[in-house]
Image 1 (tube, rainbow, N blue to C red):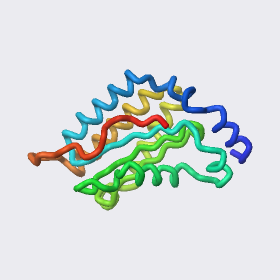
Image 2 (tube, one colour):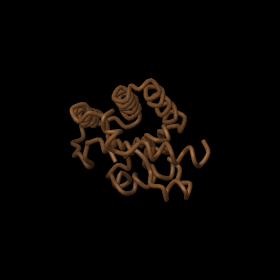
Image 3 (cartoon, rainbow, N blue to C red):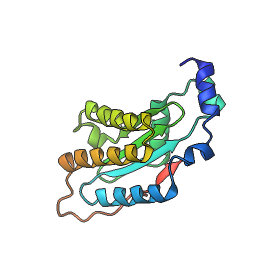
Image 4 (cartoon, rainbow, N blue to C red):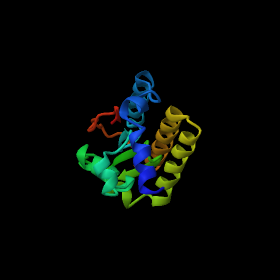
Length: 167
């Protein structure tokens, strides 16, 4: 996509338009599912759906991977006790999905697994199944974290909020 096409895509996807695809009642269900998932493993999961980037960000060629890392830092996903934070970042205007994982997960789970989950979410988004994409992504992440970071008998506090951010 050239620069003008990308600018146009971001201009036509303001937050209020994108929020229509993600009803608050459905996001609340996903937040509850995130909390339930985190009872099965040591991971902490966050979802961010960003409708669009600013014109300055587009002109500066900010990509989804860099933006995902910015959100990872901003939300302190890197700051969990077990270094088991996972951020799922969706740039709606670019139709991009990125998963950023903390160093504790990065060393134990192959990057291809995360890319497959991104592809799963993107596939549902292409079909305009936005909520289903988030749910299936969460289920896949839950499965990976249960396998590599089972909770066991250890008591665990919820270190990060479970809400899905629409920005």
